[in-house]
Structures are given as C-alpha cells and as structure tokens.
Image 1 (cartoon, rainbow, N blue to C red):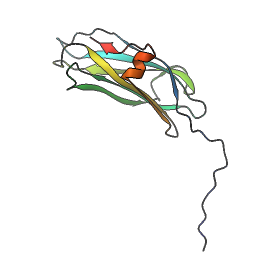
Image 2: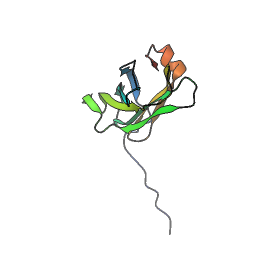
Image 3: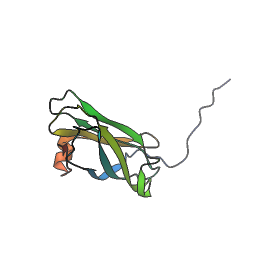
Image 4: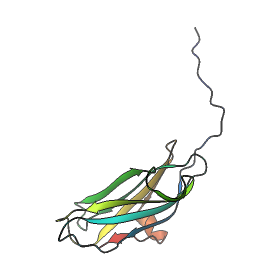
Length: 134
C-alpha cells in the first residue's frame, strides 16, 4: 500500500505579523502599597490569517526579576480586526519588587499559523518605542 500524503493547495502564509506601534501606561508606578498594573498596547497587522498571540517582557534594573509573558489575541482586541488591530493587555508589578527603572526587553506577536516576530531592546530603541517603566 502506498501512503497518501496530503497536498495543501491553498494560499500560504509565511509572514509574521507586523508591529506598527507599541506603548504602555503608566510609565511611572508605585508598588509601596500593593501591586501596580501596567497596560500594554500594541498595534499589529497580519497579512492573511490574523494575530493569535502577543507578548512583552520587562526586566528589573539588576536583571534578576522579569515581569511579562504572552496573551491570546482573543479578549485583548480593543479596535479593528485580528488582521489589523489594536490590542491591550496588562501586567501586574508586585509589591516588594525591585525598585528603579525596569526596561522592556522584548515584545512579540505570532499569527494563527505560528509565524512569529520578536523585537528586542535594541530594535525597540531604533524604532523609537518607549522602553522603560520607573
């Protein structure tokens, strides 16, 4: 018996989402009385199948602590569509976390088929994106 291997005959998506803008607020927080939330906003476009996940990570001044992770696009879309939209999600900075300027070490986005873009600190700086929480 000859095994059958399916042949996919459809449009192919091999392009990761494009991150058009990135911001977060507030840029200054106070965790002396408890957790402080920082809201991340990312405008992302995907040419065919749509954004599936987004993420960001913040690192403490010493580099010993990291806050962040990924979130599904569902429930974070605040404007537009998954192929051209604005997404917002939050991270909680815990009470007793390290004081000082926390840097954004990366932002990322992936589409439904797994194409992924990761933008690290140097590229964030080059693109003029805000990259620190105090």
